[in-house]
Image (cartoon, rainbow, N blue to C red; front, side, top):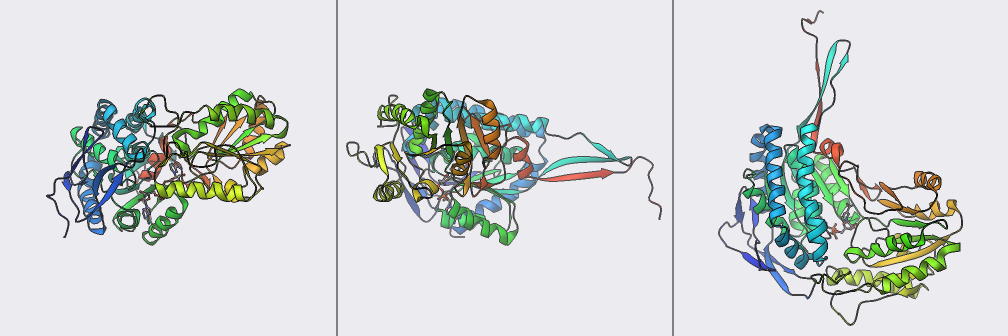
Length: 495
Ligand code: NAD
């Protein structure tokens, strides 16, 4: 086994010590190679991170498999207690986690501190508490008792993206562990660092060795090895559609159940009876995280009669956004993640402008800030079906199209291959109910956005995903759900 166990590799990132080796079977494991991790804020090198290949992935799966029987047999209350202890550890280290996450993926420090990291802790508490109440009433069939139970499935391979690294990872890690599974987590190569801190926190909280393993590396190396490992019982993936296809193909070989949370190009529908200030506020909010939000309602569909006024209000709000260093509390919008990603965003915008679209706001990189800072952009005069409104941009780019009737609004809203979410702004609840019912989307928000509750199902329709996460849906996925039918006392089989 060429895997090395000795090489110390601790990077100091934003003043925080981060071990950049893998976490496998309760110890740090180095790799023969590393990959560079660079901050999107200023291009500064942050760390050389252990680069897993098939060997380290296999080692991690073996460690998870070895730890599985004992963790699966651990009582629900004890599992819940340890998950609560992990949540407490996250709470204690919110400042450190936030600083490292911001350095690594460029999202706002204040939102990490006040929104994202508290939600990371909540992910553990929520699934710990849900576990304790998980159950169905037994029921009878001709005097026989049916008892439905959730058996842990085994080793779960969790593969996650860079846009909200720890939030999205723990949304999978917490229910998988709560359900009694063991886990191999592979964070994205553009923002791998907080996963390593999570491993430290979990160990401090008393999670037994091998129950949570973390391997860093490139998708086509470490990720592909995990997805094709025949010992893996579940694969949960959040990321892009092309990667999902590869993972689904690998999962098909082993017939492994798969959860896919994928991209979107979600609409925000503004009707003439809407509160236009609310609509403009919701629209400008779509620049959050520099547009790198899967749920972003970045396709604005506005009733023609109010389009001019709405555009005026939105353009004023967008122009007032302060772009800059995400560590500065005054900043509203930071950098995008990586030069390749910025080139992709700019390619979409350039082609749209060449095809006749008009930039009302922005329309290119922020030349004053340079680097990865892309100006908040609002495009209009777009041909129906154009690439800029059918593809996921995943940057600070909003498009605006108009409609005249509810039917046209629905047709436009449903005109992509995605179906993650949809937002309606209207003063008419009956219209919201009628139109919302016709939208293809996993989540519909009416006069609000991003109100999320872990009790609710979350996921996408069409190519935005397969399956739902949250509450019982998470446990259904991470377990082998079993029905045990018991005969009445004194029953004997005759014949
Ligand atoms: P990506 O698909 O490029 O990568 C995601 C993860 O998959 C990374 O860890 C990567 O290393 C790994 N990977 C890449 N190739 C692989 C392979 N062949 N086998 C196994 N693993 C592989 O996605 P990204 O660019 O990191 O993330 C952005 C995408 O994620 C966007 O499309 C966004 O909409 C989506 N996303 C969806 C949700 C949701 O909940 N629906 C949430 C956040 C992001």
